[in-house]
Length: 347
Image (cartoon, rainbow, N blue to C red; front, side):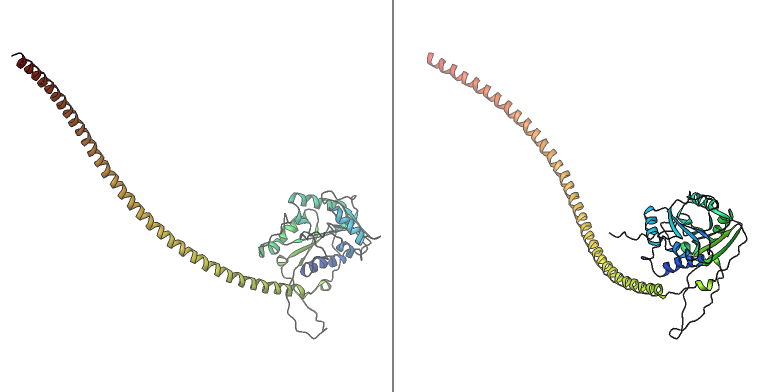
C-alpha cells in the first residue's frame, strides 16, 4: 500500500509545479559551487538533489535521519561518486574537515533554536577551513507572515537579518541570495525565445533565502540568468482551483441562504409557540390564583362548619341531659302511680 504524502519532504514523483521548480532551482544553483568538490548534502531526503550535485562534484554524500529513505536513495541513485548515509544533524557522522562544500536546504527551520546552534557547530566541524556552506530557509516575513501561513513541520523560522546574524556567529563571509516566484505575461510567436530581466530589489521580499558562507573570501561565479525558470502549470492550476472555489462558495451561499431561511422560519414558529406557552402560563397562573382564593374560602367554610359541629355537639349533650332528667321524672311518676294503685286497692 502506497504511503500517503505528508508534505514534510519534497518527493519528485509526488510534487509538481512551483514546489518542484523551487527545489530543483536550488540544486541547480549549488551545481555552480561544487565542481570537482567533495560535498555533503544534509537532510538529502529521497536523493534527487544529491544526484544533481554529483553531475559536477567529484564526490557527494547524502545524509538523512530516515534509515528507510537512505536505503531507497542508495538503491535509486547510488554510484561510485554518490552514496547515502544515515545520520543526525546534532552529531554528523564524519571526521573534522571532511568536506569542501556542505549543502543544507530547508532543514534548519525544522528544529528548535537549541538544535540549530548545535547543527551549525557540527557543520563548521566537518567543513574544511576554506570550505563553503550553502544553506537555505524560508523567509518568515513572506513565507508565513505575509500570507498568514503555517507549516506544521517548522519549529523555528527566520527573518532575513535574523538568518544572517545566526550564520555570522560561525562564518566571516556571507553572501545572500533571494529566491522568489513572480507572474509574467507574454506576447510571443510560437517557439520564439525572449530574454527576460528581473531586478531583485529587496531580499526581504524573497520567499526563500539562500546563504553562501565561508571563512575565506568568496570567489565563485553563478549565472543566475541560467537559473531562471518558467512554468505556467502552477498558474493555471491555481486559476482552476480559484474557479472551483468560487463555484463552491456560490453553492455554499445558496445552501446557506436556504438554511438561513429555514432557520428563520423555524425561529418564527418557535417564537409563536413560545408566545402561546406564555399565554398558557398566564392563564394557568390566573387559574392557580382562583384555586388559591377558593382554598381560602373553603378554609373559612370549614372553620364555620367546625364551629357548627361544636355547637351541635353541645346541643346534643344538652338534649341528652334533658332526656336523662325526663327519664328520672318518668321513673318518679311511675313510682307514684304504683303507690297510688296500692293505696286504692287497700282502701
